[in-house]
Image 1: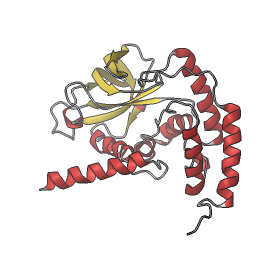
Image 2 (image 1 turned 120 degrees about the vertical axis):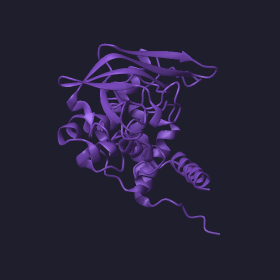
Image 3 (image 1 turned 90 degrees about the horizontal axis):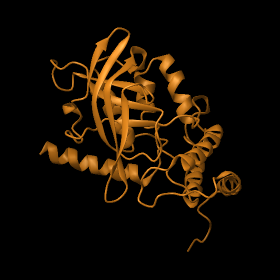
Image 4 (image 1 turned 90 degrees about the vertical axis):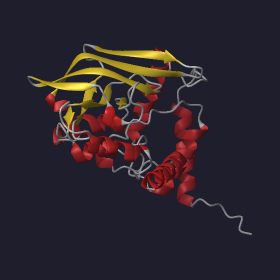
Length: 272
């Protein structure tokens, strides 16, 4: 029987460095709601400060290239970092970069520069606002609508089933951009400033934790915050969901694998 360590010397050295850094920098005296509900303002501030420190080292997206704001780590070192992060008494760091691959494909150069580095450096939190109270996971039936306006769009509607621990800076939002167009060919995706006039965020208490809901009441979104063509939101949303289901290299977690298996089984069932 082989009792040698499964980790290389490089991994062990990196583990020691990571552990020492985390002990020095992780936020003390955190009050984390045990039911998964949002952090209060004081504890959000503590964790967001810590997120920015992680982002400065590229550790919010450890295996992403350094030029994008990632850590440039090998998969072996990425695993070690994730193991050490899980040892710390911390809430979820806010896995809000699943939209980044879609932005890299569909976004303009200006949008990539504006949104991606801030996300990977821990300077912004982005909520995914696709689901709605009456549509569940059927994105093709969303009723939130976006109407063209001079220089942008006016969005009205409601999003639901959001469980973020942190208050957002941006909302990546799916909306109907052409009510007379065929399903899946009438959707657009927008990056909405969470401080926009007419935007309301509410907490809905549940038996365990809480759900966040977002209401758009004549929210104006500049045209340069629309991601991709105005009617290609279905493809863009599917790009985001692919990352959520584990299809992106930097997201190395067992959750991604399980979600991918579930989706495969669903696809097989639907094909029968």
